[in-house]
Image (cartoon, rainbow, N blue to C red; front, top):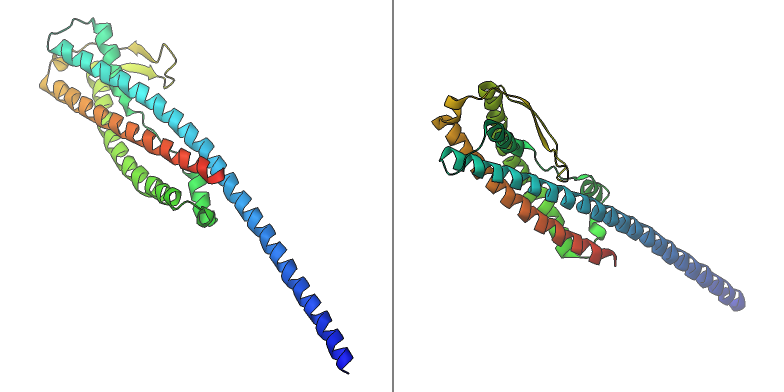
Length: 233
């Protein structure tokens, strides 16, 4: 009897240990799968961040052109330079092009949240930066963007109304013909009016503020990218 007890006890222990080992290896396998999923998502996020940084750089170039044009128009109104009507309308159109705004891609971040993969990120700094950028900084940026766009929509409507301005814009900073003036009727009285000068001053203020925001966002995206690379190394 004792012999059978020892035998069955041994068999039970062997079976129990086998189950534990199987569970361990299955859990390890699931951990590897989930970790690979997390790493794949982070790699996709890095690609998206790279695209967003390129988009920011492009808009910084475009906004700088708009700011330069606003300075030239400002100086022209104050008699500090002499521009032809064609040049004036080109630079006025360039100021109006500041309407174009940066729109970040948030799909991969949302996937990390909805799939709970965000919990698998080892770096607390990365998790905190992700939430701060996508839930705070970009939300605030979106509010400011709408404010800038509302102003420039009204500004461009006035250009159509007062100058009968028809123009085409391109957003490729490498294209030499980014602004094409199709037709206009120069309105000297409006150009010299306090209303236009006030709108020009407000344009310069908005463009400068938006440029500062874009540069700050670029720094945050680059810092986030470095943390993402460290996470999957």
